[in-house]
Length: 206
Image (cartoon, rainbow, N blue to C red; front, side, top):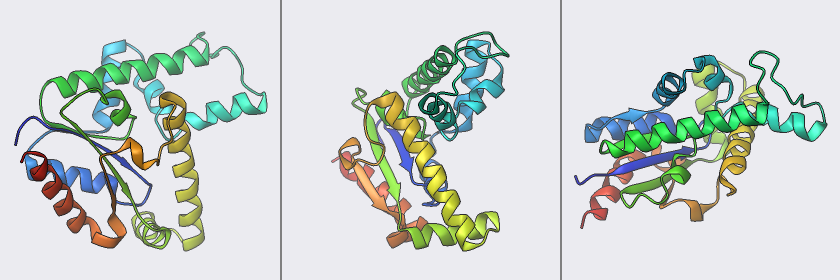
């Protein structure tokens, strides 16, 4: 396989993380998720917890505080404006993503990697989604939740991911035009979705 950078955006409960890992294993290429946070913390010299707290799942709390008028302009712990801190963290992670991509074929999960690498000709942008009943069933099993709590968690997590993506990219998180391939994992299952992605990547080489 020629040099291929794959980014995976995913709805919560669609199995996107598991699918991305399986594709990486099948291609014997690096898989980057939490590794981005660890490397970005080292690069910036900032505490790793700052990156974890500014992860794609939690940035919405900052945006909501602005909307509600409860935002304090200064982070009491760091003495740095929160907007500046969040922007610094995002830009550092973006630098790490570009550096990892420059090393060769790899897969990224989330963190606006599709947007950050949109000018990279080797980048293939994939979005994994699924119908709500399928996602509810998966989350129930993964986290031992009842159906109502699983659905609530899915809705909240997707909303936070969308807020993060929309805020930093100026695009809409689940808009099909942002991606090269969108797959309903609920129709194909994890294994079938992995096989479809691998087939798609092979076709790209033709």
